[in-house]
Amino acid sequence: MIDSSKHIVLETKNLAIGYPHKKSQIVVTSNINISLEKGKLISVLGKNGIGKSTFLRTISKVQKPLEGSVLINNKNLTNFQDNELATTMSLVLTERLPESQLTVFELIALGRQPYTNWIDKLSDNDIEKINTAIEQTEIEHLTQKRFYELSDGQLQRVLIARALAQDTPIIILDEPTAHLDLHNTIKIFTLLKELVTKTNKTIIMSSHQVNLTIQLADTIVLFKEKNVLADSPKELIKANAFDDLFSSSIINFDKNLEQFIINT
Amino acid sequence: MKNQQNIVKIFIFLSVLLIVFFVLNVSLGSVSIPLDDIIYILLGNTEIKESWQTIILNFRLPKALMAIMVGSGLAISGLLMQTLFRNPLAGPFVLGISSGASLGVALLILGTTIFGGSLLALSFSNWALPIAASLGSFLVLSAVIIAANKVRNTMSILIIGLMFGSLTAAVISVLSYFSEASKIQQFVFWSFGSLSNLSWQELQIFTILYLVGIFSCFSIIKPLNSFLLGENYAKSLGINIKKSRNLILLITSILTGVITAFCGPIAFIGLAIPHIARMLFSTSNHKILLPASAIIGAIVLLICDSIAQLPMSEFTLPINAVTSIFGAPIVIWLLIRKRKIFV
Image (cartoon, rainbow over the protein chains, first blue to last red):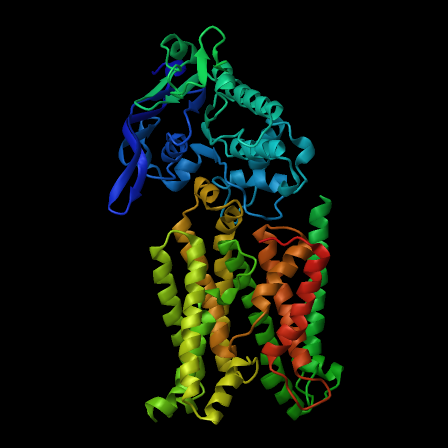
């Protein structure tokens, strides 16, 4: 038996990410070798354009790796069937939803699609999972609203509820706090943190909230110019990993405060 | 749930409307037949005047059935295209089906002037028009789908379909330019659309293809609903985007193809009915929208056909004109009232 507290849920081997461009390739980042543990809140940090979103898209099979491989529970991502992947990881994306008249409940219920029959009938079990997701994200009062009536903060909780309803061991979120104010940002962060402890799911998110991430994430995947590191915030601070994150003279990492501060 | 009760109520109301307008449609025409006799004939009573029976059973009944199938088929095709392209302006004809059919028919009718008499013999047969239309739409549609599979972006398919439409329109203009007036008139009459003149045998073939298209819709309810979240979410829910997309295109082409082949290009229904269904039921769920569009489409085309017969006269207006003249203002009014438009 493998020790469940050290269960590796996601591993990359010599992974190179980027885009095919005509006949050649544009490599965004290469040689990514990290392993991520189950049941953690994992945050992907790095400056703009360094490949955070590309990385998330690659590990969620939206795009192919240029080189190397991604292993989910020791199985190569390319060997996952469509439906198998849909029951393994769920996504919360930054893209705007197309306009429609979906209610919040219907939107969350779509998360059950991998489990429903051919005409998409919700079973009692499906309804139960949807209701649990609604409870966990505390959006009971919103369920009969149309999703376009929601504020950005509420919509983000609904999208997280949809991912929870999909009932997958892994949830991947691309910048879930991108449009939110500080208060809502912290609420989403603490919600994700809570979900990890309560449900033992693995949550992987990208974020620009460096200071918050250092306080709340269990593991940080740090995208730097030369390499990609993955470790707990404490260990990364100890190794001075944050010092050259932005390679800029405007801000500096303060080791004692454990956060970035503006140079004055 | 209150919402669910409402939905059932609206469906019952629509079903009653469908029956009422079906009977009304059958009872209207240049020969006036009392309503109770019509109902007796429809119920299989054979003691009514034989000429009346012939009129009802061989002319009006097939036409009313056609109206129901054409209306529902076009409405469903329109809904599929609007959801697939997430574009409220998409309709069943964006794939170039109507332009392909027009091209086929134009080549048959107008081409005889240019290519000589070899095609002329064909055009006398009853089946010539539907075959030419089917071949034309099949060719243009295949071209669109082959091109569609080379692009990853679904929006590009929409534009490719529109471009093929322009191309065929151009070819038809050139053909018309070199044709005699009488031929052009014949072609224009085809493009007016028509629900009549179908024999029971043709109706049978039409019905089989129609049912194939309609029943296949059950298999795409899941992908259609997941497309409401966009393609990336749909994919993360285990939907095979390419397969679902091709299936949706295939169903649309069967339905629209067979309708255009037998009835000509009938405008407006496919574009407008899905919007009316969405507004009436205020939902985006395809489990409701598919049957809703079908039944509303059937009702609207029955009404349009009844109007087209110009009750109390011997004239018949082109169905294509009626659908647009009466339909477009209604949709405009609905949109102004509701303000928001959804896909």
